[in-house]
Image (tube, rainbow, N blue to C red; front, side, top):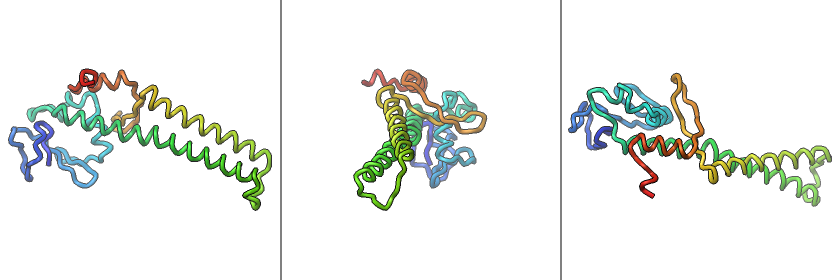
Length: 185
């Protein structure tokens, strides 16, 4: 169990932390249990990443507020996981697929793959698809490394959506949580 108000981890099935807070989170496998309700890891990260998380009565009632360090760690974990899954992984897959298609077409052209018959129209279409996938991969890589676009999971109408955020919005959220990255650099 973890108290998300004081970040005390030395709790043994108690209902109240030594700081007096009832904001206790129990992690069981891949789920988080808070106030008797179980959340998946994706749901918990999305809830903790919401800008309104500290203002909601669920988290700010008589029990006290959530520690900003906990909010920051869950927000950064949310950003890291979903940016990897939604931008970087597809870019790597597109690069791999593009090179695989190009390799097959080059090997066929050099007559190393004699048993495969590829008509000219199919080869031209394969080259087009290879360049198209490579272009999509380069666009995703540019958005990650040059534009610094990040992806985060959010809760909207009880559904999880994935939102791409710009660096300025990222810094705004971090500042509202209580952590200013620009002053640490």
